[in-house]
Image (tube, rainbow, N blue to C red; front, side):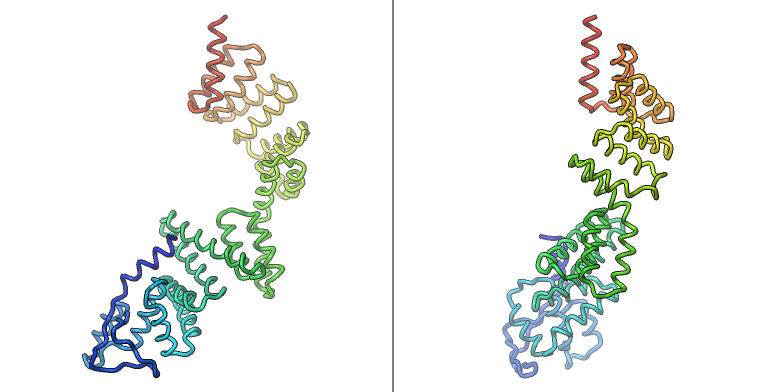
Length: 378
């Protein structure tokens, strides 16, 4: 059961039932009520109502209608669903519009529980893209509120259900631009920038409202760098280094002082086979931020690739001396460099330090054991 379904299903506890008296006939605009079927009322509002009316007036019809709406929103499979629907239609032939209006009003008043119940009742009775869109917006608002209250896991569950509804709407109608509009913000929140861009691009195609299109153009500008980083990494992970370079290069020159942009381009060029260009970008990354262990590691590995072991050791040492004392890879890589030069004791000391910093790395443990065996055989 989804978090939204569970939350609203629990609201059945807010509903009580009243039984009509047998000695009277009850009709609503010509519709005869079945006196054997109890009528729901919202308990809290029932108590409030009874404190204001006399015993002759009793429970108002409005309270019964409200109880029906609550119940149909809380439990969409309630056994008297069809009967209650007929009561609603007898009460107000325009109940579809009235119900949607009530749901919107509750949403605008930040009463997300009541709004959600009314939209669920509306979707239960009529079903429409607009009703599902607004229900997704209710779940989104409930999720954001919980995140603000630091109920992170629960908040994310509401947001994920909201996202799933929006995606389902687009599965049914690929041109339903309101869902694209909202869904793009969801993907941005999840830091799924490629999805956000692809989704918002559809708003620019389908949405006739120029104000919304302009809003989305501004959002696309804001996520452009993150989008390129994510897309570049995706190409890199798929070993399409040429496409990765093409995407990431567009971060320059605007982000030429950003260590991460330079670092990623260095990784892409090395994967592409251009080791010199890779080192140029690693040096640029180092100039931008000389405290990032990954940059020293990858630059040193690039010198390894050029078989310049001594220069690689210098780079790893420079990283360690820059104050990066807790990165086990710097010690491990420098240790491998010493071993390659035949300086076994220095190599052992560095690999041992790497093992102390990260005892769980199997590669480090295997190398340490290999050196131990080698030293014993000497």
